[in-house]
Image (cartoon, rainbow, N blue to C red):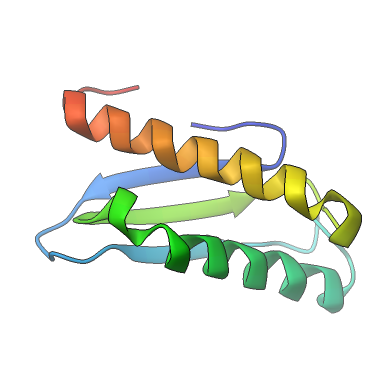
Length: 95
């Protein structure tokens, strides 16, 4: 699943907790400061919403850079993808 900011891939795992993988390339943001901000934001949102993703391995790939003034919109976009991923898992079909 994807939107303007992120692409999210999920796969069921044998572990009870959720695991996160991140891909933030130099094409997303040339500056390391920007890439690190994106990674911190994704990790924190993942940590706050692990109950949505229990038993899944999740890979989040950034598609568009965002800074502090766009951070709220990017967090909402990622949260909506996490909720869609949970719905797909509940339906146990490919979305």
